[in-house]
Amino acid sequence: MSAKLKLLFVDRDGCLIEEPEDEQIDSLAKFRLLPGVIHALKRFVDAGYQLVMVTNQDGLGTDSFPEADFEPPQQMLLDILSTQGIEFRELLIDRHFPDQPNDTRKPKIGMALHYLRDGLIDPEQSLMVGDRDSDLEFADNLGVTGFRVGPQGQSWAEIAHQVLDRPRRAELRRDTKETRIAVTVNLDREAEPQIATGIGFFDHMLEQLGKHGGFALSLRCEGDLHIDEHHTVEDSALALGACLRKALGDKRGIARYGNSVPMDETRVDVALDLSGRPWFEFEGRFPRERVGELPTELVPHFFRSLAESLGATLHLRVNGENAHHMVEGCFKAVARSLRQAFVRQGQVLPSTKGAL
Image (cartoon, rainbow, N blue to C red):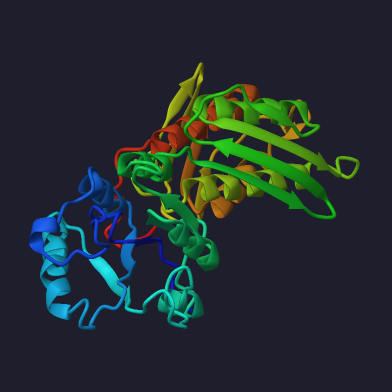
């Protein structure tokens, strides 16, 4: 199956260009772009969206609306947008009159059916922008979010802000025979961590991740502590990593890398890369077997599980004498590294491969 795409389906008249009084753009003199459309479309393109024009052009190709009246302003529109780096993956144009039976005229999705058939649409991130009820119905039929632009809706700037600048939030539930976990993260909001796993010192360490990582974190775990702590620690790491990965989305704009922290006699060095390639290396030896109710052997296991579900390369090295400081230093150092790596620096994907 082909990779799913972030697609922006966009109407033409009344959306890219102002709606003409006679319902047809049949001359260059009537051609006028909607305010803010170029800047907004550039933002979407920079954020990895592919554009698809979907437009009803009543009777195009008939005597009442010749191709010669449509093509010059249409090509002019495409040329103007192209000079700004805005290209369309595909132009979908329906030519039927409203009273003609067909499967392609919006809000029907015949023109775009191949995107569904080939599994190309990422439904959570794709959207449709138009100016009519039929455009919003088209979005519903296609299974994507619809936005209305223009006097009856929002501006292009507002739509771009709502879609591209939204907080990176995610929720995740992970239920097994051994643990029941609920995690919520918001990478663009700081808040007091809300943690409850039944292991006091582990709760304190997870609080360090949220507090020093600079993101809102809630994690609740009901685990089989009557057996031991292993499943609670491991599954919490797996759930947290998966939730963070979900919140990061396609990772466009992130700093990607992060590192290091000292704590009294302890020094912790971290090398972190949100590469999408899980790997974990650990160097260190804790001077005692437990800190509170947390076995120290589970500390590197926690970070290994976190790296695997987050899709991160994580190298962690700790030196010290006080086991409490060493464990806490590990959590704080990884948290600070995550804070650095999560920072938004624009919309560019930090990879030459085109994916992380």
